[in-house]
Image 1 (cartoon, helix red, strand yellow):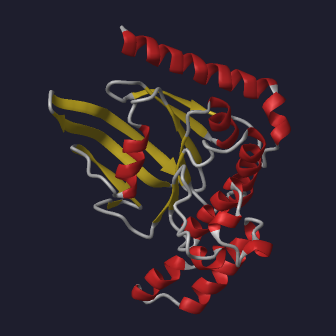
Image 2: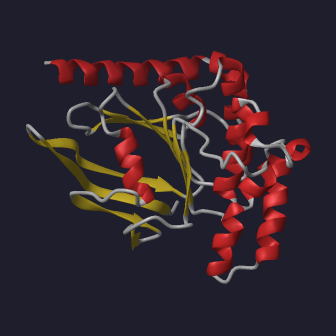
Length: 261
């Protein structure tokens, strides 16, 4: 299986009034094509910082990030980003928000008609066909995140980066969004790097779970999730699901104890 994303020897330091702080140290991993890799870790372990560097929104202090063997030097349409806050433009309709990247595509000499058709298809795929002319304020939190995911997928990114996208949703809506994401990724055409605080979510979505330690963030464990796909919510009751969840929780607790020592 080919690696879409390669992270090698990644280190990130920040300058503060009391000196330099090491946020991430010697982080290295791959994300293969069609894979969902989830990252968990204690608060302050550098999960969002790591995702921001993969997105090209921040630069590493040392190490490098390769996407399709090309160095990541800044933001690009080859990466789609979904945040915890949906970041929709409040004055644009769902259709206009999702199609917003079409204007960017024009500058890359892409076919604007094809991009507009893909926007319409994605709106239907995320279940917002009846709300395409609604403004964000007229939608629920889950519906706004559906629109945000559709927008992130418009340019057919090589990897979808998700920073706790379902963290602010209620439990039922969160499960619906997890199911939606698995459905969108079900054909193996979408590669995902997913940051979450929720261990159950990480195990349910992920093919692998990477556990970061805290202060500084390092890879404490990399745990494969051997559960069949397509996945159903009922699989959360499977003994194998419970075993993997327990393994992730144990690794997280060990990381917290080490940070507190």
